Each structure stands twice: as C-alpha cells, then as structure tokens.
Image (cartoon, rainbow, N blue to C red; front, side, top):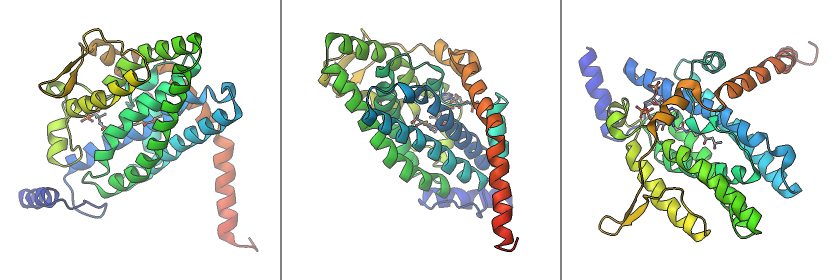
Length: 311
Ligand code: 3HC
C-alpha cells in the first residue's frame, strides 16, 4: 500500500541511494523536484540576459571571448536542466511555456540591471559564487538526473566564478575611477546576492520536506552563512567595502554576522515587481518568437536525416 511504498522510499533516501526516473516516487516528491528544477532551469536561461547585454561592449577581445563562452555555458546549463526535467514528465514546451507566460519563478537576482562593466564581474564573482555554494550540495541530492547535471554545471560555474573575481580584481587594482566602478557595482549586487539563498529558514515553506527527501541538503540560512564567510575575506582582500555597516566578525563563533536583510524587497522582486522582471520575460518571448524559423528548419532537417540519403 501507499504507506509502505512511502516508507521504503524514505529508507532508500536515508540510505543514500539515488532515485532514478523509472523508480516509484511520491507524487509530492515529483512535484517538488519539478518546481525547483524548473525554477533552476529558468534562472540559467534568464541569467544569460544581464551579462549578454555586455558582449558587444566588452573592453577587449579576450574579455569578449570569455564572456561569450560564459553566457553560452548558461544556455547549456538550462538545456541540461530542461532535459533532466523531462525525466519527471514535464516537457520542455510545458516548462518553458510557464516561463514565457510569466507564471514561473526564477532567481531574484536576474531582475536587476547590469549597469556597468563591473557588474559583469559581480555577476560572475558574487552570483556564480553563490550558485556554487548552493549547487555543490545539489550534486549529492537524492534525484539522480538532477545530481548528475550539477556535476558539470558546478565545474563550469567555478570557471565563471574565477573569471568574475579576476575581472573585479583588475578594476580594484586599477585607476581610482575603476575602483569606484567596482565599489558601486558591489554596493548594488551584494544584498540581492545574499538574498539568492531564499527566505530565512523560519519562512522557508519547502525546506523541511525537501531536506527530509534529500532534495536540499542544507537550509537556506546555512548556505547563506557559508557564502558570507567565504566572500567577505575576498572583498577585504580586494580593498573593497561590504555595503553593510552592521557586518562584524564574531570571534566566538568564527562567523561573520550581517545586518538586516530587506525581505520586502526580495518579496517584491519575486512577485514580479523588480526593476527588470517585465523586460526579462519580454526578451525571452521575443527570442522564442524570433527563433521559430530555427526550430522549423531543425525539425525539417531531422525529418530529412531520418529519411536517409534517398529521402
Ligand atoms: N529567487 C526567487 N524565488 C525564490 C528564491 C530566489 N532567490 N528563493 C526562494 N524563492 C521562492 C521559492 O521558489 C518558493 O516559491 P514557490 O513556493 O512559489 O516555489 C518560495 O520562495 C519559498 O522559498 P523556499 O525556501 O521554501 O523554497 P525552496 O525550498 O525551493 O528553496 C532555493 C529555494 C534555495 C532557491 C532552492 O529552490 C534551490 O536550491 N534552487 C536551485 C538553485 C538555483 O535555482 N540556482 C540557479 C542558479 S542560476 C545561475 O547560476 C545562472 C548564473 O550563473 C548566470
């Protein structure tokens, strides 16, 4: 019966086994993964936009090549995740359709504009740094296809993170105007990145169950703290200032303590009222419409290939 199935399922998870697409799983487990993985895939896809806007304006050929490769990687991450989602019975068209209809969530951070070249560095260093902290544990999550997709994604994110740090370091070691540009970008990206880990544990509706199922291995606040502890020393190393007057190191706990997070801003942004929400969705819709001929051509080509040389 259902209870026995659920118990056996939980035992497999507790024993560290991976759940694979053909395995029995509770409907709520499937829905939880569909929700989180779809939001994750959309984040990668929308995440291409703020940086993509700088490809034509990169200050050197080498920076342009790096940025092109990075933005292309993000598209690849979205593709792996949409594929992994298909194994849960949610087609690409359904998942992507939810994004285009404006019904799906994606990370808050991608609703902020990239105003200067330094912002490109902040996205790599801070946002991808946060993504790594969040995603390395996900590569050990209970659902096999999601965990495996994370392995390669994390390797690529680690390159993104380093290029972001390198970009910001060059600015921080540059002219006073370049240092000001870096500090201004840090001031704008710090708090939205700290929010990326999601609401505080007491307000995180899904955490408890997701942790029991091994979909999440750590709570939102635990990962946020890890990010802060690892990033503040990097900010100090660069001679920049964390835009948080209440930030302090607690020698008793060995952790940095941060000031109050503006959760009203977070809630506004994830409800669709951030600076760029409309623009982001409009841009994805435009790409979908303008790409119709590519999809048609690819489908025609596939039919021809399948028919063989005589077809
Ligand atoms: N942005 C937008 N919405 C968020 C959010 C955020 N940062 N954090 C939480 N939320 C939403 C949740 O989706 C949930 O909404 P829902 O009930 O409508 O689905 C609600 O707030 C409550 O939050 P919970 O903590 O209960 O939600 P979760 O248990 O799902 O935890 C999470 C949130 C930690 C973000 C988790 O979903 C997760 O780990 N997701 C995968 C990580 C991810 O999406 N990474 C994307 C990286 S993108 C990237 O790297 C591209 C870049 O490199 C360019």
